[in-house]
Image (cartoon, rainbow, N blue to C red):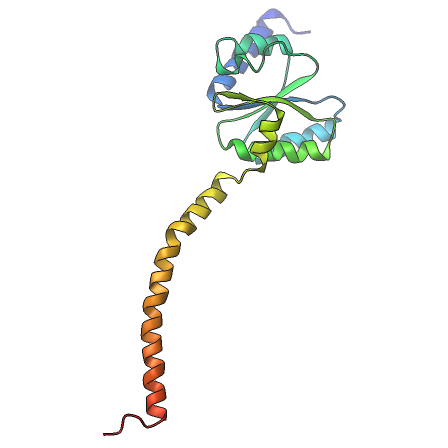
Length: 175
């Protein structure tokens, strides 16, 4: 069992992590094997996040006075958190895919950019396109009119060349 200084150190470390990361998902992990836990941590790291099993009382004390205070209040059962300072959609997708494959892993709530969201909000977030997908769609929409203009301008020259070529073949340009 940990002594008070070790628990204090854990609490300060968790407080720092909660303050540095704008997205936190509170999850339940009952009946996960070590292998399943390793797989979960690997998928969370792949999404640019971190995963940590927490002690309920330490997490509640660490979150006091922070945006995560409402999220980590009155915790019950076996709890863990997944957090990131990067793309919340990527982390939500990774967790939702894992939860779909492993019913023992459940969502409890989440904190996305300072707002507490429930399980349905997390599921909605997981179905959204990622930032990269949105950027690529936006760039396509910005680039499409320019591509159409260049195609139309090239078409005029191409069509003129075809008409001149047909005229030469049919001897229409004899003087």
